[in-house]
Image 1 (cartoon, one colour):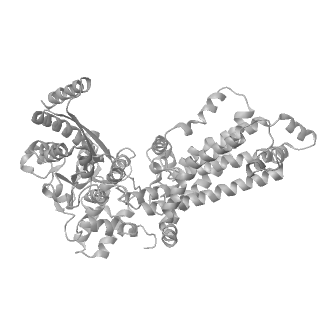
Image 2 (cartoon, each protein chain N blue to C red):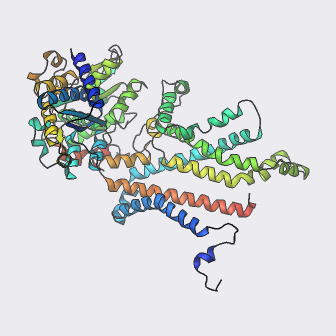
Length: 284
Length: 336
């Protein structure tokens, strides 16, 4: 080997397995084609509008209301999924009971179900004449055709993301760690909050981010249960469809770009948080 | 007799599919949502007539969906030979994209509208809220089901029918009319994205006291879901909803299907086409050709046309009422 080292070689980490250049090239090409090119087209089309027009569309009251509904409810749904999903994953990993496999398989259903089916089923259930809807109506709670309905649909579709990201991490935690904590004099709740939860926190963040991202982009199940009233229960993806129906492609692109930007910032923050916690709490 | 000939036709179709195909052309009709049942019957009748006349077999495929979405599909490259959409504005959009020649609406009789419809109310059995006319829809406590005019062509006719009534009542005062329409939409608890979705909300979810719907859709809903559950209420004034038809010039010239496509649309105006339209609850443009028994089902009411000076045609209405920031958007602004 001569002293001439190009940048690729500098990047390369010594490894027994060959093929770094090929694998990196392949990954970059693939990601570029599948993710970057469509998104770049979207952003370019939005930029054709010019900054002032773009800002006018994004800062419009109606657009802001729709973005608030979409991101606000998605965030709430992801928080609830984070708590409920952690409990479900814990039970599925730590306990053995009859029907566990069945329950485990059930978790995936919201993944597999066409979203329109989920939306129609939830609407039928929560409509004022539905099973749950009629009961809730008696205590004065309206679910279908209100923002609460949107929230329920988003919780439904987001649950598997948290459970499935937490399961392998929980399985990897040795019982010995808990025993060690106990011998060192930790109380049971101290073991939970100071030993176990910090260990799963990075994975929990990943699940949270996935559930959030999925909820933000959700259209199919939400429009059936939302009521779709402007400023109240209109989600941003519906507003994009509305702009398309007006043959207003530019308006649709502008809202899509705004969503893309907000989602990117949120995911970036979550990623940084993850890096920070990993560094602070040690690698899992 | 009709069933028998349909059977024979289906059989002939199967034979034609199974055997070596000779002189066959295919036609794609891109249409809107509630025309499904009508075009199923009409396509069969046309295929038979065409074969009797020319000896050629023609296969007609129909695509149905929200009118605006269908128009966008054609603009984006769906190979439609003919479009039969809910409103002229959607066909105008295709013409603007260069696929249909300008002035398309003058090519066929009656503004290229072989059949029309109107907007009526569907209420629950016995009409418990005593809904008789548009005034009853703005009363507090009444829930009105109508889809979003932004995403549904039919809903735009609903909106305009309400507007026409409001304008007549306010002697053309724009501010009062807008307030009337706004108070109507304040009574709408769910804005579905399409006409069929609104029907489902009203019928299956039992939401709302009144559904504003196409006349043909209301008749169909009543026929399919039982006459003892719903009643049709005809308001004193409504709109003449004209769903036009056109040949997609760019596509038929490329595919060489212009002759059969034009014959297909002409057949809509023929006695047989007009009869079928009336049978499926569309008001035929030449009522003298249709069955008087079918015509007797259509109630008489005052109809305002989209070309009436207060509206001034689709191009103007689209820009004034339904464009971004238009009157429909304004009535939902929370500040007024």
